[in-house]
Figure 1 (cartoon, rainbow, N blue to C red):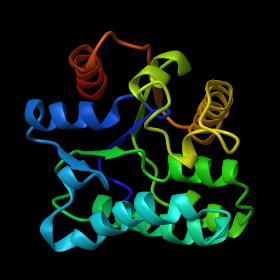
Figure 2: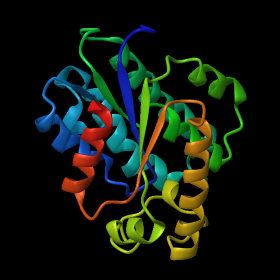
Figure 3: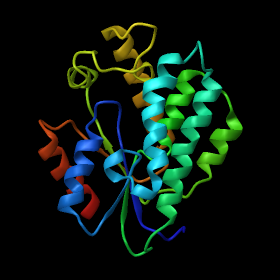
Figure 4: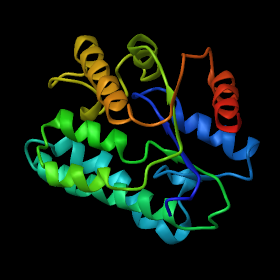
Amino acid sequence: MSERRFCVLLGPDGAGKSSVMGQLAEALPEWRMVSTDSAFVAPEHALVSRLRRDLHDHLLPGLGTAYSVDFLASVLQTAVVYVRDQVAGGDPRTPVLVDSYYYKILAKCRLAGVGDSRLYSWWREFPQPSRVVFLDVSPESAWRRRGDGAQLNILEHDGADADWPGFERYQKNLRKLLLEETSALPLTILREQPDATHTTKAVREALTS
């Protein structure tokens, strides 16, 4: 497992990871894409897609009332373990690109106030990637991509209201934690590109250089 080649595509909310991975799946067919996005989840893992939908449709709207942040972390851990298992599986000669790995979930759990250091320590013991490609995006651009705040969920902003100050503050703190968690790894930070096509080209060059 330690010799398996895998890279991680990382970035704040609205960085465009899903769009880039979709384009890379066509541009780099020799690579295997790992994500909890339904486009990359095999039929035999349909439970993962259902959990993701339920997270957004039921858990997040009830966070703090019907559900605690500890319950949230427990559900998010299913995604962390699924992604880890997917990295471990398959032909070890096939290069793998992973959407966020555990880094983004860990950062969001920390921002949500989940203080279980034992959980974080376990995740940090997972095999580490050979490279992290970080898609940088300004909070302003991410805000526009989220419909000027209309498409936000509670794990993308501070405070009860999805307003611009809360979004900007949250995204700056998220970026800081993501870079903190990956600071000891080979890290390529890509500046914001004008569109998904240019971003995909930049990521492809970073992965294949």
